[in-house]
Picture 1 (cartoon, rainbow, N blue to C red):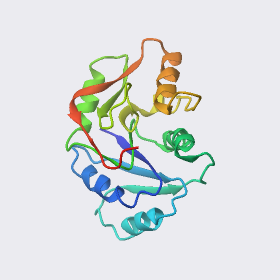
Picture 2 (cartoon, one colour):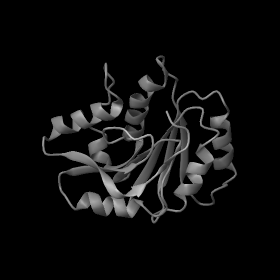
Picture 3 (cartoon, one colour):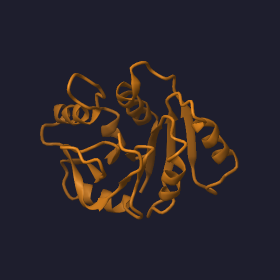
Picture 4 (tube, rainbow, N blue to C red):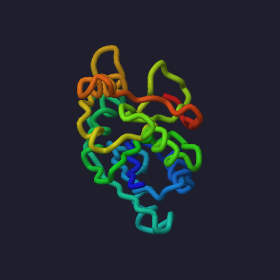
Length: 190
């Protein structure tokens, strides 16, 4: 399985190392792409040291930085997901927030579940706090689809809802869903 785990980071020093360690316990060896959005807590420096010193052995880890946008976290997440999607070159993309711990050995199971239905364009892992919709903080998608999503924020909707609406505009039969068995752990909450 050719997959990139795409992680937006912002002031993530307390959580990102645990997230990266958990990624080493997957059933495939993913490329890991992180884009930092102007962290002030040493996230970039810590991650650069991890990469330079090969703390995770031969893991393919890439770190990029983006200028911090005005408007706070809620305005920046759609921009970061867009930037990540555009940078990914593998067949599959797994969006993962920097504070979500995946269950071990789940990436192949997510792909198999997605492949069961041609209209299923994404499979997410449930995590707390639960929302009334599929969250994009832990979701597997085909990269070519993720690159076409119109990431946006508008009044009264999070970026996940905008992404789902954009997917429906591409094809009304397409949808994303939660995997029925996998549960992730959210380290920080909102």
